[in-house]
Image (cartoon, rainbow, N blue to C red; front, side, top):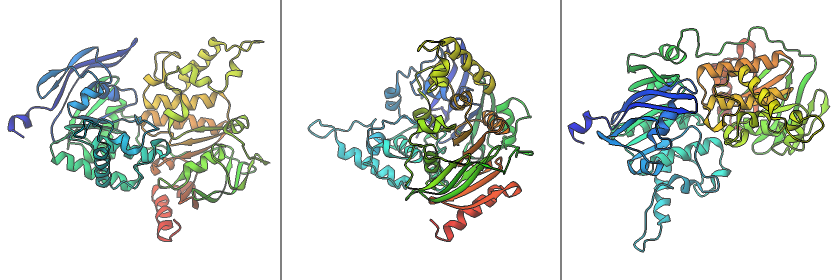
Amino acid sequence: MSTSERKQPLIEARDISKSFGAMKVLKGVEMSFERGCVHGLVGANGAGKSTFLNIVGGVLRPDSGSIYVDGTPTVVTGPRHAADLGFSFIYQELALIPQFSAWENMTMRMRPKTALGIGDKGYRRRAAKAVSDKLHLQLDLEKPVSSLSVAERGLVAIGRALVGEARFIAMDEPTAALSDAECVRLFQIIQELKAQGVAIAYVSHRLDEVEDLCDNVTVFRNGEVAMRLQRGDYTRRKLVEGIAGDSTVSEKLARRRSPICSRATPALEVRKLSCPPRVKDVSFDLFEGEILGLAGLVGSGRTELARMIFGAESVWSGQMLLRGRPFAPASTRDAIAQGLALVPEERRTQGLVMEETISFNTSLGNTAAFRRKGLPLVDERKTRNAAKSVMDRLLIKAGSPGSRVATLSGGNQQKVVLGRWLLRSARIMVLDEPSRGVDVRARQQIWDAIEDFVNKGGAAIVISSELEELEACDRVMVMAEGKSVGELEADNVTETKMLELIYSAKENHLW
């Protein structure tokens, strides 16, 4: 690489603006990406980070402004053109084709041909295997993506970005679904890419990662660049203040000080629930007015347990009691009818109809409540008013109830899912990774809504890979390899004690 190449940014964005209808999401953004540098992009959900990267990647066209590549004005006409320029992307919401295998998804942008001009599948398989080995992936590359867990899909998306000779890699929340070991390996790969002169854009709400990895950081706020910082100039506290626009927002969730929790009669009793090998003889009680956390590593059985309770997975053995009565939901519809709600781990495919409106999604599955009197027709005014009440209550940032959910940030999408269940007056809510990919302010708003729900007599189960987040719960059950390995209450609900239970289970060969 020549000296002039090193001095000249690989990518330079000048005065980039973008609007969706009346909402301005980017306002004159200027930024550059240098070779061999990790550039952090942080900001609240809806601040404009993902929209900006979508413009660089050719998914969206800016209303005004220019992109320069190697100093040359360049109109990125689409994702294929971006790939030809050497740009690769790991998006927060994984753009994978479910029916394709892992190796096909990882190499879909490759176009190798044999001497006869036929697509060379063997070459693509070998390329996928090489990246899989580099990342130490423990998954069958022949399996369709639809059969993989959310964490495994995340690894496939990372693998796809590393296939080929990328000059620029944008990573949007790449660690959201990864285990600690997988995160460590990804960080090692990032350092290797830096050494090779690859320019990297790194978007994350995990500010400790930003602090450790990034050479410089740009803070987005309300579609504008609010702050530019070099390594050594920023701290986590300074980043939080820049994101929020004030010094009153804390990255750490406050512990509940006066929970309204009655231990007289459990809202839900689970006894020896099993579906081997994923869940094995799990028992616990959930009380009204309580937030119960489920902690554990990826693959510990937390999500499977939640889906069994909600009627989405089969139960092989065991018993559940709902407010003292036998509870064995035959389906998710049955569970919903009995007052249960699930905010799923994968909101885009399991919780939302992305191309529909906020009104449609908040009324989904509950159209009977919005019918015109005496008629089978849905009253659109009622659905809009209900959606508007959810938007006001949860501070959803959108133009109107008629806005498409696909145009919302990840945090606002999550609030739409949560709002749907609040409209249905659910009694028990199960939330799987409710604040994944969500900024500090939106996370606090989501937790405020959960606390308000339980303080009004509801009960909640919260699954999170962020152990620090679970410190806000009244009680935490720790899982390992499908089993409950311990419970923590009150002041014992700490990240340290949760880790002790998780890793003592490993040392005692409970996994």
